[in-house]
Length: 104
Image (cartoon, rainbow, N blue to C red; front, side, top):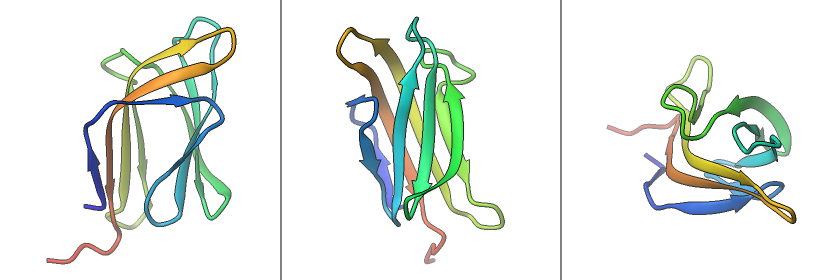
């Protein structure tokens, strides 16, 4: 396990969240009601996945990326999101990253 973090972090849209193994997660935008967050996952500066999640929704509140054909996985749980006059913010309360190279 590369990252196992359950502390709360507040992140502004447009801010790169650096992960391990040259991954970065970016909140691109939050809808007008603050109910949907558009995310992009980058590796080496190239978008490899994107998703719209809905914080505070038991079904769609976690961004999950699994690298095809490997055991690599990234999970980011969003507690809530807000659209403000100056900044759009989201609170992350769980971040997990498992590596391709798992040693036993």
